[in-house]
Length: 115
Ligand code: DGP
Image 1 (cartoon, rainbow, N blue to C red):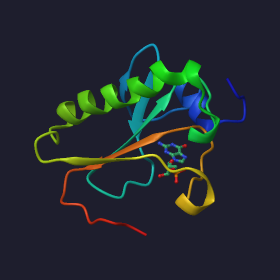
Image 2: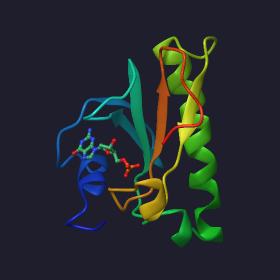
Image 3: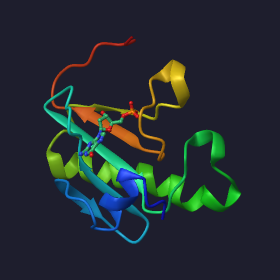
């Protein structure tokens, strides 16, 4: 755990967030600045800075992010309508929180590409 990392604190229950899913590897909570009716962040509970720092030992948790996304989309009632998964990495993608996270965005038709 990185003590200065807000997503580590949320995953550890030391900072508040609207949690929607949790298991032993990942935590998911509503984004504080939603861009669509459903906007959830799914994060590894263990600190990984970004995809650039992910290693072979992270393979299971990276897979778990996708499995959690599918479960949460069903839970939120947006699986059939569709949704988008985004993982921003570094400045050109606009990453602002340096704890790897997957955005799950849906609940309305989405434009593509963005930005
Ligand atoms: P990114 O640009 O991919 O690094 O997105 C970071 C997202 O994290 C951004 O959409 C806002 C969200 N966020 C930042 N701080 C917090 C927080 O303390 N709580 C919650 N729920 N979301 C946060």
